[in-house]
Length: 184
Length: 122
Image 1 (tube, rainbow over the protein chains, first blue to last red):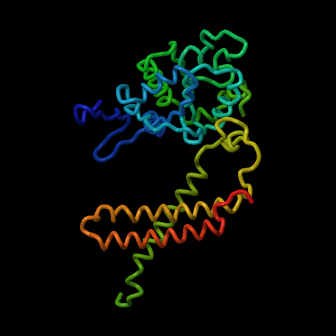
Image 2 (cartoon, each protein chain N blue to C red; image 1 turned 60 degrees about the vertical axis):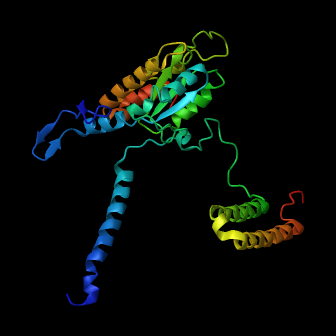
Image 3 (cartoon, chains in turn orange, green; image 1 turned 180 degrees about the vertical axis):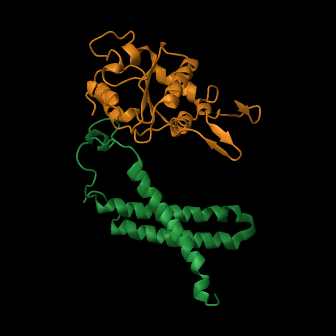
């Protein structure tokens, strides 16, 4: 990290070919770097993990440091769907539609035991993990997880975002994966 | 080059370049950008719940009347801010002027009350 002052650091530049007055690298890396540091999350908070998320967004933990201060409450501009809390089976279709209405590329972070596996709610009314209806990129364990854990999850998402090929969303594998969930 | 019309040529060129740049980038980004359109994605976003009916319904004209009246009296209050800041300098004359101003608006208010502009049940 190149240090500008004690409190501000710049992102590392990707590998590339450099000379006097120019820098050349692949588009994948530049786009990855830009996307990684400007992820707009859509908080889908249904219970206590949402409270932890509020702490994560607050001044102390400050998710804005990762370029994610701009929450999007419409799926149209969101990059990252953060599912925090118990998803009842009645909520399932709502969650799925929110995911389907997000523009590609889109990522999903499943925060907490309930969203990831149903958690302690091993009952008829609770979805046993959101990965039954939508694909999940990163799972954050905990009941509820601490803000540090949520930040760790977001950083893992950042890693995925940075290294994702620009053509991944057009690949047959990706489409097959979506079709498995019944998503067009 | 002495013709004044020719001297405006660079400005004309600048306009063409500016419009051309905007137009080209907009067309190019729409054309080049990868996108996947599905029916569900293009549906109206109603917090994940299926949209019911059409949003383009005829509204009661009274909504617009009330909205205009709101704006009118809202702007009236905005006028009061600079008056309140300069209240001491304006003195009694300013106070009387404001009373007159509010008085005229009150007359208008009573007029629209009598006209039944705020009556909903009809």
